[in-house]
Amino acid sequence: MDMPDFSITPITEKDRSWVARFAAEHWGADLMVAHGTSLYISQQEGFFAEVTGQVVGLVTYRISGAECEITSLDSLQEGMGIGSALIGAVKETAQRAGCKRVFLITTNDNTHALRFYQRRGFRLVALYRNAVDESRKIKPEIPFTGNDGIPIRDEIELEYDLFMEL
Ligand SMILES: CC(C)(COP(=O)(O)OP(=O)(O)OC[C@H]1O[C@@H](n2cnc3c(N)ncnc32)[C@H](O)[C@@H]1OP(=O)(O)O)[C@@H](O)C(=O)NCCC(=O)NCCS
Image 1 (cartoon, rainbow, N blue to C red):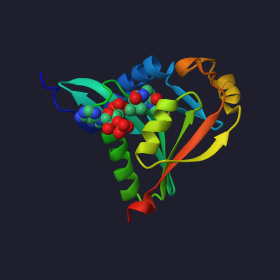
Image 2 (image 1 turned 30 degrees about the vertical axis):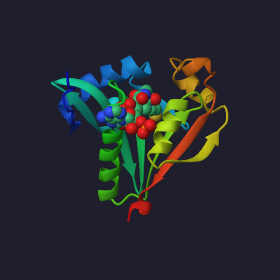
Image 3 (image 1 turned 180 degrees about the vertical axis):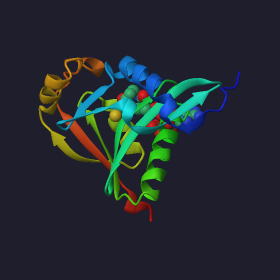
Image 4 (image 1 turned 30 degrees about the horizontal axis):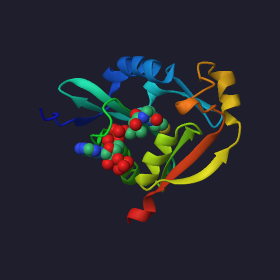
């Protein structure tokens, strides 16, 4: 049986309560902490992916000046292009808003995300050693052990240079 295509839709005010529940389910809480700043995923701009009325992916972002930060990304049906399409929607929005770069923070254990983003033109630009210790003081839900049993300690910043596309 063929998988049905997915649609990509911008988040609006009416989506905020399910986004908060989605964030709690996938990230331990609606509160996201990285590089010493806190934010609520449900209060961000974003896009969601749907297949036959079911949410199968979510990306959130925020734009400040010439920078666009991806604040969360989740695909619930991996390997069918949902993550790439969500990232593409953010890149397009950031470009239209006049941003120079799209960046994000992930943690040292997330080797799958490091691969995923680099395959999509993102570059590693900074390593913040032990930064997760600080984030964990604000958000104790951050586990000590992550993917493949790797201790979660460091934050890694990746960026996509939007000028590359011009
Ligand atoms: C990282 C993540 C968002 C990727 O989402 P995804 O939906 O699997 O991404 P895609 O389907 O676009 O791409 C994944 C692979 O599937 C392949 N793919 C895409 N469409 C496909 C299709 N129709 N058929 C087969 N394969 C396909 C892609 O080529 C890609 O492989 P590649 O990286 O070797 O090129 C997802 O794994 C996830 O949610 N992880 C957990 C949360 C997380 O780590 N988030 C990021 C932290 S900041």
